[in-house]
Amino acid sequence: MWHNGLIYKLIQFKIPNYLIVILINYLRNRTFRVKLNHTFSDIGSIKAGIPQGSILSPLLYTIYTSDFPKTNQIMNYFFADDTAILAQGSTINYVIHTLQKGLNNIEKWCALWRVAINTEKTHAVMFRKGTSRKELKTLSFFDEDLTWDKEVK
Image (cartoon, rainbow, N blue to C red; front, side):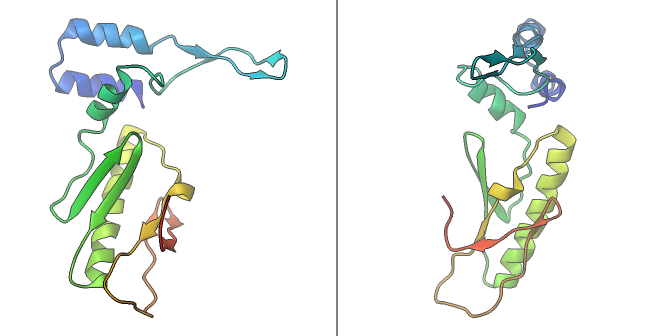
């Protein structure tokens, strides 16, 4: 999570300044260090993200993603930092076209708010009545072709 983007959104939500200052102090000047066997790395600065396990983290994440792209044709579902988008329609072509438009909007949003997506963990699943031998048109997300799977974990 991009700290300056979060601060901007907190201001847009009209969060009182004194609370924003507390959150800035909470997020800034955080460091990390890696231990491998008995050797420690140099100390690094944390420039983005929120502390895992913090009671504030789910709330800050919800604020940060509150303007995630929404349309009448696509339903968004969130669980922690996992996201699913769903589209339904009377034809496969309509559903695929709708999903591709949604993915394009999500790409723009992620670029604007500096959200990184692991495309290797991004999958497409088609639920439909009956079976079809028709090859499904490939969806593209961040210049990667998404695989059509029967199920995802």
